[in-house]
Amino acid sequence: MRFISTFCFLLIFCATASVAEAVQLKNVRIWAAPDSTRVVFDVTAPVQHSLKLLNDPFRVAIDMKNTRLIDKLAEPASQDKFLRRIRSGEYDNFLRIVLDLKKHSRVKSFQLTPNERYGHRLVVDIFNEREERSLPAQPEIKDEALSLSFRDVVVAIDAGHGGEDPGARGPRGTYEKIVVLQIAKKLAALINRERGMRAVLTRQGDYYLSLRKRIALARKHKADLFISVHADAFRDSRVRGSSVYVLSGRGASSEHARWLAEQENASDLIGGVSLDDRDDLLMSVLLDLSQAASLEASIDAAERVLGGLRKIGKLHKPRVESAAFAVLKSPDIPSILIETAFISNPHEEKKLLNSAHQRRIAQAIVAGLKGYFGIHAPEGTLLAARKHIIERGDTLSGIARYYRVSLRNLRTLNDLSGDRIKVGQVLTIPAASGG
View (cartoon, rainbow, N blue to C red):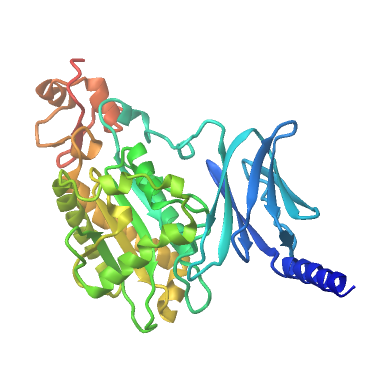
């Protein structure tokens, strides 16, 4: 009887310990991007799980062993392209989460260890069945004239952080990821108003993009310049001012630049990258100095943008800084990183939330870009096209004959309805067309 009592006690103790050690699912976050949806499960410990993709209807079943749900599940937004709803069921020794899908998709899962912002996380990514890396369609040209001979210069605008990675946080609780996206959208709108320039955004909403994918999207769109937009933070809330950075392969230009690069490069640890995604792309682009010309152009662009920012407020540093920012490591695209202000400074946090100030920042950046592309516009772009200043005695037909171009194309490219021109007017000359 004594042996039976001891055995029963051990069974009860083990069962109690098992319940006590159950993993808790505390929270679920959903981040919908144009080409994927990420579902993040906050758990109290690593969780044994399995993933099944099922049809009729399309759904994903996630079985989490020895796990308990302790809060309500999040609901996906109606505009989510992949996820219809999330539901759950509890069984003897596991928790089943079902992701009801809107279409057949690919899925993968991975777990992340704790960092300074999050605890243990189970991440489930949902993709198109055939992977699509493109951004939402954007116009290739602004008007019919540009299709005749020249293309726009393309500026890739990268709003830092997003989704799981909120970036820095201001004293009033403002997230960096929100304000830099607002600035990036204003910057894109202003660029798209400039004749011969076109902007593409790496992200257009609140979702996470790996540093690698930001570079890949810029390259996909054949960007002539890459701009990453951020809002700095520091432990001393009195520190303020804008700054502009380029890539350095030889160490940082200052201790703050080194510290900042480390913070920004941690985005993939916070946002969550699967080990399967860690190929050697970023290693392959470290500093193959075919990058020398790209780096030289980056410095020129950075100096001109810094000059624009100088006119609207205080600079944190009077010159362009450099550090090993992973997001700037593209070997073939001049790239700069702009810290628009210190979101950790209460005064600057307030300004960053102001739409008019955001627009002033965007205007200052555009002023710098116009100066940069005035010298560095790639061959074949409208901004690099030949120019002709009208002098007394010039006629449109005579100019067309001199440059051996079509009179019709010359009119179209310069938005001329007839042959009337005036002294001092600047005409853009199309490529020779023999018309």
